[in-house]
Amino acid sequence: MALKENTKRKKLPEFAIEYYVEGAHLSQRQKDAIEVRLKKLAYGHRDIAGASVAVECVSGANKRAEYKVRLVVYCKPSNIAAARTQDSVRGAISEALEAVARQIREQRERMRDRHRAARAV
Image 1: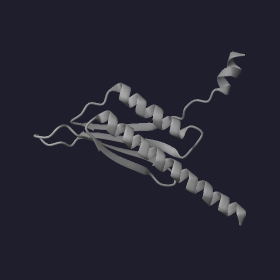
Image 2: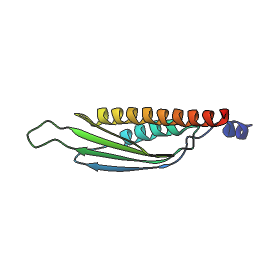
Image 3: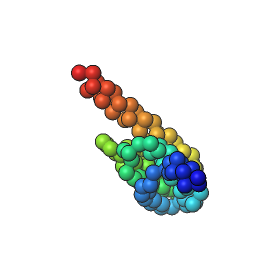
Image 4: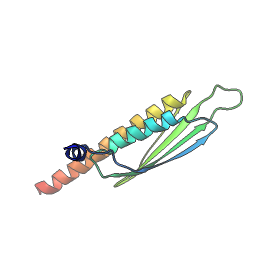
């Protein structure tokens, strides 16, 4: 009985996520949050193959700290990228994830429309 219950649950997809951090700190909790968000985007789809996250401090010596996050999702048919700059790492990550999610949804919708149009002909 327990085996049946385990086979009904679907696991989140597995793919590699690369991190590059310069002049900032990215905690394990933040990495886990990024991973969960990206895996939720990939759940039920086979278009995402991996991701790359780059976090760097871009402020000068006399300015407040500003952090730039570049997020690239390796996706079919074309890769998706977003870059956001904020005064906090968390805010920049959140905005970059939202931008990538929006772009992935739009790309999937365009692909669905393309397939619908091809079937209608």
